[in-house]
Structure formats: structure tokens, C-alpha cells
Length: 372
Ligand SMILES: [Zn+2]
Ligand SMILES: [Zn+2]
Image 1 (spheres, helix red, strand yellow):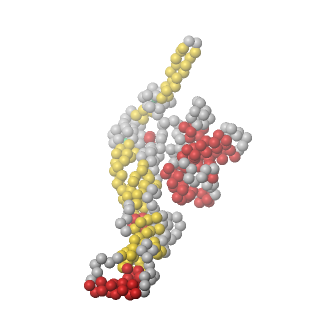
Image 2 (tube, helix red, strand yellow):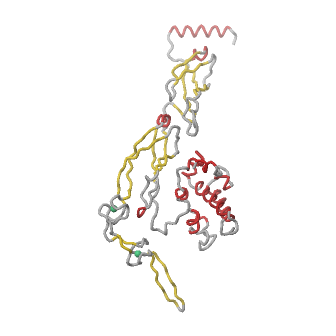
Image 3 (cartoon, rainbow, N blue to C red):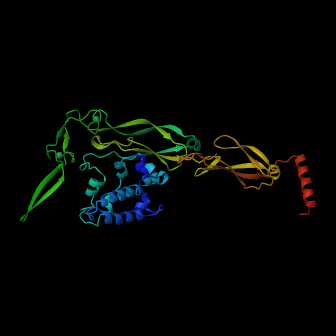
């Protein structure tokens, strides 16, 4: 598995586009390559099928905001948990070629479904459940240390009593109207010719079977509304816009097909003290002006890992930045932490005592004498 992922070509290279390419550019590049390498047009080239698969996969990923973000962030490893079916879900290959091939022959869904998506569900009978997105707000501390969160999700679930079939045991019969085909055929005679029209069976809505004895739990729908607690592990180092995929916790599929997935999309809330830039953390620290002039040590600089101390050199100006290594965010990819940057603000005192004022006046005199 690992090896396979490693040896895969970069999706941007496959489509020959830059990493910044927009949706239109990606679509255009894909269309061009698909026309060139489509196996129908290269019947003698055994590699065309493989090449086409690669192109399709690259397009399916880069055309999907969520998958593209995962790929951009983690590379092929980010899609490791996805099945081929997951990768191609939502990718609408058919519409890209609409208008190019008139009736949709060759490119119109069918060939892509069968050859490239690997499996055909046979029309509308079984459909995988929809993916769900759930927005989760976390604090900077949460993504610094990692967090276990339990979210309560209200959603439609597959009815466990009937396993989503909507009928009691033996409560399903072959549809009598279409005799199980899911289609109705009617003939019309016009002049000398016969027109045969095929339409979806209205009684079973194309399923080919009808429910005689509906399940009492879900009243034949195959699904029920439930709320469920779901445990989410938020890994260290995640940032706003990153998503955590929880397999199989999306909406149920129709007629017992596999459920979709749940994507927990993170928003990291702004912090009162720290500002995050990638893996680095910025913090402002006020220091007294004698310290800035004379130099010294400050011990109470806040960091996400407790207080840290820094050395202030003599003659430090306001706005100076000091780096505290490894006190930034944990790196999501790889090891270690980013750095913390302390931005120093030199405070002019406003609450001077008589004694302090005298000292400053003396200082002023001395400096005037130096001939400024
Ligand atoms: Zn049921
Ligand atoms: Zn029917």
C-alpha cells in the first residue's frame, strides 16, 4: 500500500497544470488529455487504458475542493484512506463532454462508469450515501496539544431493523408492473414505423421490486432520523480549513448501499495572545524602557508550552523580534514544532514617581551635556 502510494505520479504533473491552476484550467487540461488518450481512440495501445485511469484519477482529485486540499497538504498520503469509489465520487465526467459528442456516446458516463470507476451500480437502484460536512470550532490550544472531541450529530441513518431495505423479511416482491426490470416499454405506431419508448417504471421507481410489507420501524423508508455521538480525534498541528474524514458516518446509501463519509472541517478560533502563521506563533511582549536600554532577561514570555525566558540585548528598539526555537505549533507533516517569535514593544512610563522623575531629569541633563 505504502509503496504504491509513493510511486504514484504527481497529479498536477499528470494533467500538466501548475499547482495554482483554477478549476477551468484543470477541466480544459483534462478534456484535452482525455480526448488524446481515450482507449476508444487508441485501440492498439495497451497503455492507453492505464494512462487514462491516471488522468481520470488526477482530475477526480483536483476537481474536488476537499480532495484537492487533502492532496495539496499531504500528497498522495492524504488520500490513502480513500477507496477508488471515494476518489471518483462526485466527479462528473459526463458533463465535461456534453455537446462534444452529441448523444453522449463513448464519453457519456457509461464507459467511464464501467471501465474507470470499476463498478456499475446498475442505474439508480443502489446509490452510496451522501457525504456530510460538519464544521467544528477549536481553540489554538486544542490544535497545539491535539484533542478528543465528541460531537452530536443528528442525521438520517440506515434503519437497522430492515437493514435499509424498507421491508420486513420476505416483504419484498418483484414489481408486477415491470416484472422486475425497472423499465416500462411502450410501443407507438406512426405511419409505417414503430417507435419503442423506454421509461422508468413508475410503480417501483426503477428498482424492479416493490415493498409489500413495509418495515414498521422506518415505515418503508429504509432510514430513520437519529442523533449520535461521534468521537473525533483532532490531530496536533491542524489548521483552519483542514478536514478530518470519518469513514462511513455520512448519510446511508439507498437500498442498503454503503453510507457516505463524514468530514469534520476545522475552524481554529483567533487567540487573544498568540497569532499563528503556518507552524509559527507570534506574540507581542511589552518591556520597560530601562530594560530595553540596559538589556537583561525577561522570564514571563507566554508560549503555548508555558512561560519562556528571552535575553534582551542593550539598546533594544520597539518592534524588535526575537526567535524562540521550537515553541511554535507541532508540525502536522513530519516532526518537531515551528518557532515562536516575540515582538517587543518598549513602553514609555506614564506613572512616574517623584524619585523616578528626578532620575530622569538627571539623565536628561547628562544627555544634553553630551551635546545632542
Ligand atoms: Zn426499516
Ligand atoms: Zn416496476
